[in-house]
Image (cartoon, rainbow, N blue to C red; front, side):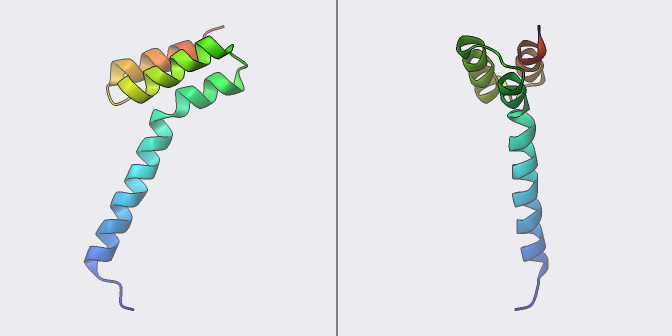
Length: 68
């Protein structure tokens, strides 16, 4: 099988999607690792899923995840 530019483009899109998903879900991971209670962890998770695509929503979820 020969690698064509279309294959490389598809691989780039897959890699970008995986990286974006990891960045958006980072606040939920940090909330779980910091031992937040279930309500706060759920709030962070929902905020990162729903508003994670906006910078402000992602920062808010990140703030909730690392706040002591």
